[in-house]
Amino acid sequence: MRRRSGSNREEWEMSFKTLRRLAAGASVLAALVAPAPAGAVSLVPPKPDVFLGVSDRGTTAEFNEWVELTGKHPALLETFHPWGNSLNEAYERWRETGTRPVLHISTADDQTLAELITPEQIALGQGDEYLLQLNDFFATKGLPAYIRPLGEPNRCLNVWSAVNCDGSQKGGEHTPGWYKQAFRRIALIVRGGQTLEAIDATLAELALPPVQRTKGPPPTELPAAPVSMVWSALPGGSPRVKGNFPGNYWPGRRWVDWVGTDFYSEYPVWSDLNRFYAGKQWKGMPIAMTEWAVSGEDDPRFVKQVVSWTVKRPRVRMLIYYQGFGAGNPYDLRLYPRTTNTLRKKIRRANFLESAEYNAGLLPPLPPKPRKK
Image (tube, rainbow, N blue to C red; front, side, top):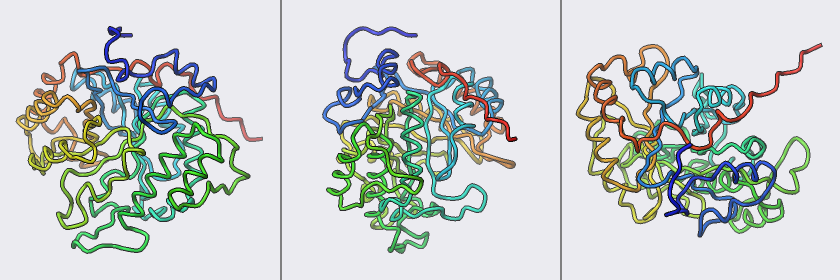
């Protein structure tokens, strides 16, 4: 465990002792970042450190291959899950790799890409059962995590986007307004740390219905989960039309702990990235590169540019490389030897952290499932 001096305490990660108290039921989260709503946690590393991360390809073997290729162990592992998916298998990968989780939540089915739930349905409480499960999972385990719901809302190919790829507005259940309301509800319930009465009162302030539950009554109090909410959008818009820029989907500071964006070698529009970093709505907030990668051709220059851009901007505190999925994967680093070699050199920096002080690797495995009789 690395030790730091006592300066900038408000930006430190939660300590092991604090997390132990949290797991035991202590309500300490609200005091960790101010001003912030009850339950908000930033989980930002000490300056000038940056959490290095990589996307999850579904097996620890593929995680270890990336470590071998790059020569560095990532502190974070970003897992992409459809709405309602169990966390049990992902938990074991986070635990076995000794990483802190970043959980991206999609509303598209993994196989068919069909929409599982709309932004309006989430906002109105039809997905609360899943949100209560997430709150309980991270709170019970005392596992710090970054929750990234519905990333890239301004990418038309995502079912939760408010814009079609021809630039027209979807309307109905898919508007920027419903997206923002859905994000607020997710943040409020997954963070927890309040009585049900207080949460329902906040939902009422948002003109949203109270917490819904289909399997029995909701709990009278939601435990505080050590989670940090990540809102992320493309730095421009796909397509670049009115109503589809990042700010159109911004839910407000009360509901966001980190501001994230994605940036790929196929679309290196640096002016958009710089404009996003300087956005007034999220001025002063920590920035995460929630996805970045080379694809299509070997491009070591892009790696140099991204790393240089990161280290020159002190609010960028998370950098996650995207590995892609499946056969014919254009993001596979093994396709790009010069890119891999450059990445290996550039992430040697000591301030690109290989571990988070408290991560899933410190927790026990899940108990075995009972045998069916």
